[in-house]
Length: 185
Image 1 (cartoon, one colour):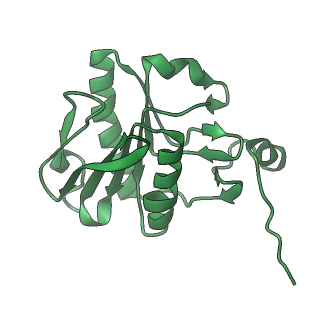
Image 2 (image 1 turned 60 degrees about the horizontal axis):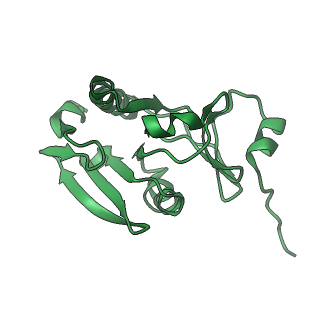
């Protein structure tokens, strides 16, 4: 006997669930991530503030934090922890969220989202052309930055425990890991 799993589009989801339901759709498969823990929220807040201050000071565009729908297409809708949208792409902001490809995406991974964030979403972002993808791993105090070159992600930087990460896309932006990862957790 063959089991058929229900597939979803962005519209299907909104027809069946309350608007405030947090979910992602990857290749028509629905995922409902758990609520982030305290450490995740601390890292998200601190890193987003650092990026926001830089982007705002340089007038480069806008950043958004989860939960915020990024509608890559009707079959792929994600809620990255942090996104940067350049001035050039702000035209894709709508009442539904962002309908297009963000310039930079940050995902803060947990044990339950490790595979999805570091493999499935990385492949998805690469396929859709996200210029820079950050994977933040709190458990090991690691940040990996991937940049898109000729349609494929290349590791731009890998920093563990100490040091500064530097964005290739946001020229001049750098942040010290000690300012991002909680010291007493």
